[in-house]
Length: 375
Image (cartoon, rainbow, N blue to C red; front, side, top):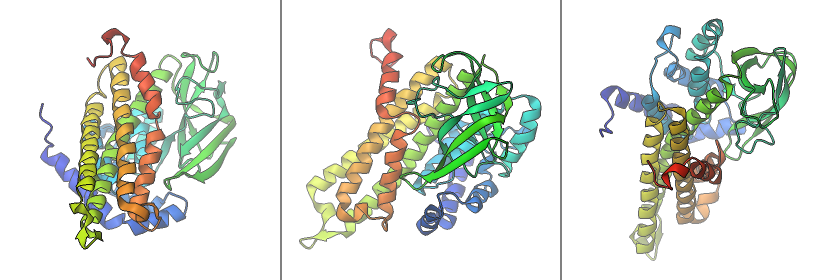
């Protein structure tokens, strides 16, 4: 199988890397973190680069690129620890809205492509524990009532994609529809907060809030699962970028830090640890590719593949983050040093879209017919 990138994909990578190196420095990221974890001008910068149009169909003013291009972009954004919700606003939202009625697509997709509208998925609830079918938010006559947690940039986003239950018990696998809700709609209340890695999130309350139907209960859960899988694949690519950059920082530190008059990179024990970190990075990279290439498969195959990828990425992120931080010593946990922020980002990502243990259970449940052997 050919894993070489095309000239266009490499040019896209180079453009995003230049943006990160020039316009999204560690100093600017620190300022954004202190200001709450989101900067509209930085989002406009991503839009100016064309990244918000990446997954929007050409018919609606987008570029119509695929999953591989998204993977390339997310790796580079991961290297720069970009806080703005690229996965949510530029990858998941267009993918979901392409299944909406034509008038809704025409209203929102061009605005997303131009960076004028930030639309994020608001699906997590306090009792969900990563289960997508656990939905307590209710939809009655096109109005929603419920609470969503950990909504990325929930207090500054322009609209939300909200799973809500039209019928059935809170954990039923049917009766779930997807709605689009504008943040300015009546009955919407947000409570913002910062996450451990400095990114911005919010708790969003809906109280008899008017909403527009994206997909009915016949396809709501399936579409939500697709959105989650896109999120996992994109985050896997981002994690590769984060781990790659953190390993580079660690290697540079080992080559400059001296003990007993020599660089500590000459110590065999540390060289072996760095080699183990490199191995985990490459395992994560291979599963990131696997996740991206499986996004177009049938839902059952896709869901298992994405869980397999999340298990490996979870293990890799934890190992790389912990080992690189330990090899730095005390400086590795100071806020003034970039390395500590790479560790924080890896720690948060391991918990998002389902933690490692959750996806290990998902893999196990979906592999009964193959006796544990990957097919």
